[in-house]
Image 1 (cartoon, protein in one colour):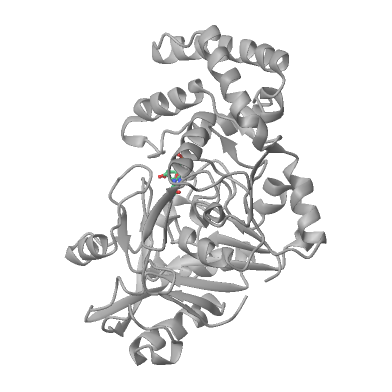
Image 2 (cartoon, rainbow, N blue to C red; image 1 turned 30 degrees about the vertical axis):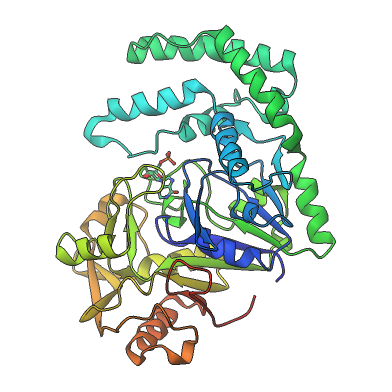
Length: 425
Ligand code: IMP
């Protein structure tokens, strides 16, 4: 496996954690390049379930190097909490490094996220309230505080002082919230600094050297294409770049150093939070998919909205990220249905479109055009492509055709051995 990026090709929660964990077997280095602890991955290894948010899934393999790149925003409290949970289960973390250029999340980011959502009322974005958006806002406003700043006591004390004054004023005037004590935040974060210190490195150098040394590097995307700040259903998006292009900036390498990009998609579509969703099912079929697929958020526990596979979306994701393959997960969830559907285009103002529109107002008007397929029975024990039911093979071949991308891998259940590899990486 050369260097490869795994991206979510829908609205997140596509099963990237399991796939990354599976591919980690073949990788030497696993890198997170954007987002933060708004992501949630559930990985099963040897009948043990692990829930990871910030730390790459490769941490469950002691011999792999795991990297949190500069494009990630790090909440030290959440990071250290995750480390503790791993240590409690005897998983070592000496094979983990975090970028000295990554920005950190402070208590006021989380509070601003929470209060802004309340203030938006029925127009809320449905964020995870982890402070992700406000931390990226500070980064672009050039007042953010980075890991390298936190490592220098005087620099951190000075930057925090400047920031906390402005943030407290903002919190008080806009939201009537009293704000934070400088001394308390300073003391707490200086303690975090010492706990973070052993993990801090210039991770761009580590990634570059790994690729130069022909190591196999896996870039683990979080969220999904339709939550990308530029390409997603703006403003119902996250504040970073989950698309493959996000790797270059978020891990500090050039595009020529990435050889493959695999898009992970569910055999159907889900999304959490708000915003238009053309193939959403509001009926008992949607509910059945939710229950069978355990479609509840790993981070927030919210019920996910469910609908049929939307080939317009996945074709768009394939184009934006230059996908070289698709990984289709949760084929077992939609087994046992009499009929299944794929959305092949949208109808809007009596016109048929096949390219994903920019405006969410247009998207809300789009009516899905479906092709219907006969269903298939349980596939959770099948380990070879040619043994899959004919109806399922028809469904998969149509997806390949519509999305103009080959399917590389299929997942028929949560366990590692419930994976069918079509094309080796
Ligand atoms: P934020 O990333 O917390 O700012 O939330 C912005 C939007 O992204 C909301 O709609 C969230 O529900 C969504 N979101 C963020 N992280 C994830 C994820 O890992 N999976 C699915 N949706 C997510």
